[in-house]
Every structure is written in structure tokens, then in C-alpha cells.
Image (cartoon, rainbow, N blue to C red; front, side, top):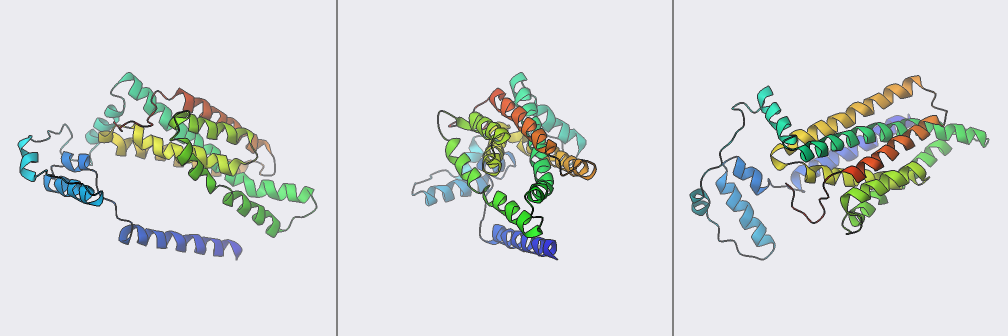
Amino acid sequence: MGWRYLYYTCGALVFVMSIARVTVIRFHETPKYLLCQGRDEDVVKTFQNLAQKYGRTCDLTVEQLEACGHVSSTHAKNHASLSEMLIHLRGLFATRWMGISTALVWFSWALIGLGYSLYYVFLPDYLTSRDAAAGDTSPYLTWRNYAITNVCAIPGPIMAGFMCQTKLLGRKYTMATGALATSFSCAISVTINIYYGTLYAYTVEVLPSAHRGTGNGVAVAFNRLMGTMSAIIGTFASTSSSVPIYVCASLLGVAAIISVLFPFETRSKRPI
């Protein structure tokens, strides 16, 4: 019954946070998106709300915005069509360096999807095998250690938030530090989320805004696909062996190298 309580608790927490996301934490569309959709009135309202929030004045009117002309679209008439998707995919590879950046971002998401998921698939059985070696095989001890491991992950994104804003590290080297430290360190739950948290932020910053939804969707798809692969590997591989831990370390070592090779550093720069 223990695992059911776990799912009930996690499901209830997600449900409450989903309600809070809709009713309490309200997000607004960016002016760039609204402008591309031809919603000039909403653009002006957004600027006025931002100005009011930060105690500034905004004299922009709808008439002034319309006088600047209209945004012409090169998109397909049907936004859910294959041709529309191809337009976005081509936009992600519009230049040589943008194509390299997009490919490396997608590869990073695939690596972290396999390495991160594989680690947590094997961790409970790995802890059980080590507890057995110590003479204690109780589920309580295994899941206590598992809980400690996950609680230790909480400071990771907070550390990443500070690290990626420093001039010395920026986004690229914060990810490299997190991935490299994870591959060597026993404090894996702290450092893995340094990499993961920074990759989340870096992805939306480095992808061109007109094609960001497609690029981000493909990245997450690669991540989830490799996460599914980890479950398949866990079904057929020996979960009591320490080999998967070393495989995770090697995957994250590759992720660290890729982080250094990213062609763009987005710290203190406007997203494209």
C-alpha cells in the first residue's frame, strides 16, 4: 500500500499546483507574440500593465502601433499542418551556428533524459543491494535513503540560479560544472539539478522566438523518449549492479563536454 500512498500524495500535490497555476499565478503573453498575432490592443495593454507595475509611464497607443504597419507572416494558413511544422524546423537551422546550437541542445536533452531517468530507475535497487551488504534489507531503510537523496536535490536549481548569472560561469559553464560534478560526485542529487535547471533556462533563451515552441517541443520529446528507454533498460538489465551508475556518469560527462561546445552564451543578452 506504500507506493499507492506515494502516488496519491504526488497526484494531489500536482492537482493543487495546477489549480494554483490557473487561478493564482497568472502569466501573460509576450508583446512579441501578440504583435505577430496581430493583437495590437493586447500589446498596448501588456506594455501599460508592465509600466504600471514598475511605476513608469507608457504613452504608446493602438493608433501609433498600427501606424508602424502590419506584421507579414510567412507561415502556412493552417497552423496545425505539416508545412507549418517544416517552416519552424527550417527556422531552427536557418544559419550554420544556429543549426549547431539547436542540434547540441536537442542532444543534451536526450542525454539528460537517459542519464537522469536511468539513475533514478536503478537507485532503489542499488540502495537495497548496498543495504543487504550491510546486513539490513528493510524497505524502510531503502526508501529513507531514497528520500534523503531526493531532498538533497532541492538546492540544485537554487545554486544554478546564482551560478548562471555570474560572469565567470554564465549558462554554458554552469551546465558543464553541474554535469561534470554529477559524473564524479556522490552528491549527485544536488549537482544533477544544477545542470537540469540551467538547461531549462538556456533552451528557451537560445532558440529563436518565432520557432521556440517547436524547438522546445522536440527537445522535450527527445528527453521523454530516452526516459522511456531507461525504463526498458531497467526491465532487462540487472538492477543490483553498479554498472548503470557508471553509465550515467559517462553520459553526464558527455553532457558536460557538449555544454562547453555550445556556440552561444546567453547571459546578459536578449533572447533571439
